[in-house]
Length: 433
Length: 173
Image (cartoon, rainbow over all chains, first blue to last red; front, side, top):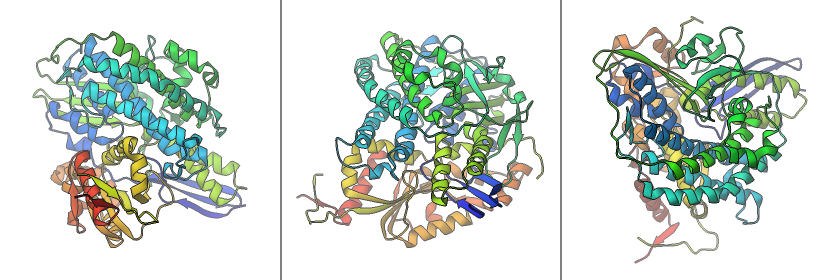
């Protein structure tokens, strides 16, 4: 039995910097702090007074891995504030690019960060150079999957990281359809590799079950990361613009990121692939459903490790959706939709790889930012992660400290947290601590 | 430029550390994308002795080259950068934030009224420096790979330069 402190100063194999400190007295966890310690960049303040045309590209710099999510959320926010309705072609190009984001971002998390836990290794760098070794096969699957996501991004929006082509109202340059047939072939070819990954994450028998609410975007017409209403655990649809009314901001004095609770219940909640698959699996692509029936039976699930399996299934969803779009889209040479600059407020909510991402912009009559706010998934998951860890430690204090630490890291990694995102914005209902 | 690898019995590897300070970590992400194509080759040539994004068992000692992305926001980060410098023969600044401070140093342009009560609280609570610094303001930097994210070609050229410098690969005439 333990007593005293257990500390992990810097959790590895995540994006950014975070740690935990656990205080144990008389075989009970008396205090547990999960803290995010990336330094803030205060971009919400920086963009004030900036012309709207410069804002989306700047805010894509919030995050290296999900820059496309911030870019598209910011574009949607500004377009709504300016009364701009994008064309069906732009919608499809964004959807295609977003599939690419999910493919490469989920694959990075699942294979580079989580797979070593499954294999009992410290790192992908320790996977043997043996073509018959399952770890070797899966790692090389991941290179093909990630590269396909990157190439699909480049073909549609110019780059996977800080894409240069999307702009307010449309695209600065439309994709070249001549590149599509090769991408379709590669997407078809990668499906068996994606399915091998799904089987691997399905077979992993780790479990941490804790009752929690879920928040996600739902579009009743299709499985969608970009359009829809916000829903809390199967409840009524909440329009994007009203989302903030349902959240309570919490200052966490030992963390550089604030947290959130559901304002009505004061309870924590989870966002991300687990929430999406739990509540939107009926909307998945037919082909994805056909090939993942066995795995989809797991959901709905309150096991946080199933966030990994949910991400693996979403990769296949994005592959299948991308194939459909590439086969059917007719690219015409259209210009971005424009409108006279006006004062207004817009809200854009998308599903980032890690969950619901909210952008809000207030714009003045000259087209400059008066106020900007962002709520990122990792901040929303922060309290949930902390409570999961508390639950885990209390249930497992008989285990050796080394095992406790490793499993704590595994739980945190299951959420796929991104600390770079979590520490960029600062807009709170200020409560002095 | 063509190369051949060192042909001694125990292949020499370049001992590398990869570190991140204040930034979006886009260059780390780009490096993971480079591994899509080059993992098998780099594994023969490079020992990643410190790379927190990819491994938990990290050692900060006897590095040939430390690649550092991100700007310096606090004295604790500056101290950490100095420790890295003491344990690396060469230091390469990676990406815009390390090379120039920007965009992470955007807050350096804040005037007094921009430092709201909330911002001031966080800066004080977590011991921020008044100004965000580029890496060369804190430690000696031997090379820079600019870009946001880093320029991939320039990074590979720089890595190659050090592979040659440490005799891991040889120039062919």
